[in-house]
Image (cartoon, rainbow, N blue to C red; front, side, top):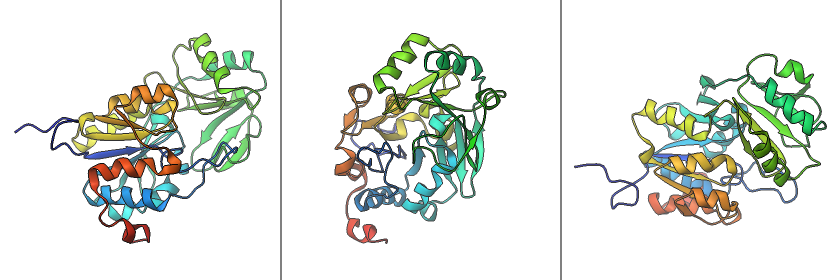
Length: 292
């Protein structure tokens, strides 16, 4: 008998891919950052999925060291048969945890693209991850937007060698400004994604959360049709289209909704938990929310 496809009776996710900010964690109003606290209902639902045998994979634009703490908040390692898979830096870095080990990294020459962007936005902030430490930055980013230590570094030194990702941020610009910027530049040899604010992530061509997750499912002997993916940002579009079932958070913008198979409630209403409950039930929600 063939395995049921998504949407057919009997289908159930074998891997759950979860964005973090705006999906598991709630946004702090007006701050551009999220509260580092997983709501009880969401934590319970994620843990039920793991207990049911689904591989739970965090997939985020965060750097690897900015994701392990969320895995710890969810208590995923204690429920897994093997080390967790984590897809970081919008798919450019794939790791196992614990301990944190990079198993795949996609790098590119960011210099030409960064130079072109700075010609149009000369006051833009630039950051490149310094793994395990924080970020090298040309100037300070708004408080809370980057994790770890911020190391002042000239831009030309940041991009002198291949990197996995470059962050461009202009607090004086708008998200629409950066959407237009990406379209106008037609960046060659580089992929880009625009965040919730005037935030641009540059990566190697073809790199996305979907490409990172594709490496994970291949290693696990699964396929994209086995995957339930939930996300809320423009950097989730490829992942939602790739997954057997892609679900957008209620507060996501239209382009994210259009990429998804379904839309759940917003992050403030525990939308991720509602979608997971569809597949993994609610039986032990009270006990698990209390830390069971």
